[in-house]
Amino acid sequence: MMNALQLGRRVAAPAWRRSMASVAEDGPIGFVGLGNMGAPMARNLIKAGRKVVAFDVNEAMLASLTSAGATAAASPAAVVAQARTVVTMLPSIPAVRQVYLGENGLLGASRAGDLFIDCSTIEPATAQEVATAVQARGASLVDAPVSGGTIGAEQATLTFMVGGTEESVRIAQVLLSLMGKKSVHCGDVGMGTAAKLCNNLVLGISMAAVCEGHALADRLGLDQKKLADILNTSSGRCWSSDTYNPCPGVMEGVPSARGYSGGFACDLMIKDLGLASAAAHSSKTKLALPLGSLALQLYSLMSMHGAGNKDFSGLYKFIVEAQKQ
Image (cartoon, rainbow, N blue to C red; front, side, top):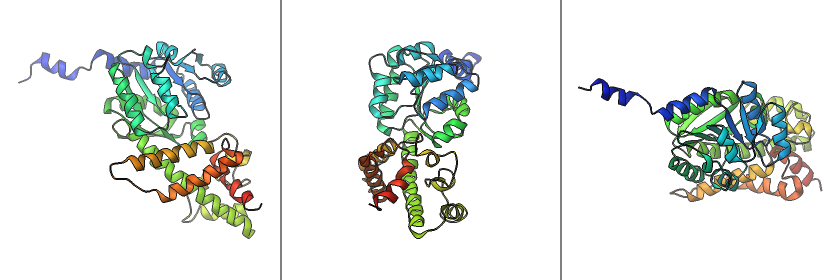
C-alpha cells in the first residue's frame, strides 16, 4: 500500500513544471518573428492583457509592435532572459536554427522549465532536432504551426496543429487560445509540423484549382461573382473560394482586393510545397505527390515572373495574364 510520502511524490509536479504553467498563465511572453503572421499574433496577446517582449531583425516591424505596447529586446537571447515562455514564428529552417541554436539565440540564455512554442512551418525532422536541443537544457518545446492565414492571425481565429508532450501542449494551449480558436494535439514533437505540411499541400492544390476555374470564367465571359456564389454553394466549395477568393472584385478584405499585397507570399507557398515533397521523398516508403508537384511548378513560374512576394492567390492573375500574351 502506498504511504502518504510516496503518494505526494507521485502526485506533486516538479516545482519548475508548476512554474512553467504559472508563467504561461500570467507571466511575460516572448515573441520572435514579427512578419505578416507573427505581428498580428503578438498583438492579440497584447490585446488579451499579456506583457510581450519581442524581437525581429526588421526594426520597423519591431517598432510597430512596441508602439502597440510590447517591450523591444535586442536579440532572441534577450527575449528569453525576460520571458520564460517564448513564441517563435519564423520564415525558414535556417532562421529557426539561428534563432534557437545560433549566437545570441534562445537556448544560450534559456533555463530549466522554459517553454518554447514554435509556430514556424519547417520539416518535422528539424522540429525534432531543435526539441532535442531544448530538452537538453531542461526546457520544453512544442511545434505549433498554424492555419487560417493573415485574416485568422488578425482576428485570432487560427487553428494550431500542435506536437509535444501532453503536459507541454496543455500549458501551451493557454496562450494558443489567445491567438486562435482551435488547437489540435497531433502527437509527439514534429507531428504538428507534419499536419501543417499536409494541410498546405491541399491548400496549394485547391487554390490553383480555384484560380483555374475563375480564369476559365474570365475567358467564357461568366460573371465572376456568380461563379463564386455557385462554387460556394456546391461541390466546388473550399476555403480558397469561400474565404480567400483569388479573383479581384469578388470579395472584400482579402489579398485579391488589394493587389495581392500582404497575405501569404507565393515564395512561402513554394517553400511549404517543397517541404511537403521532401518529406514525402524521405519517408520510409517514398510517396509521389503528382498534384503537389504540378502546383509547385505553377507557383514557381509565378515567382519567376516577379510575383514571389505577392500573395499566393495572385496565381489567378498570373494564369490569366500569362496566357493573354
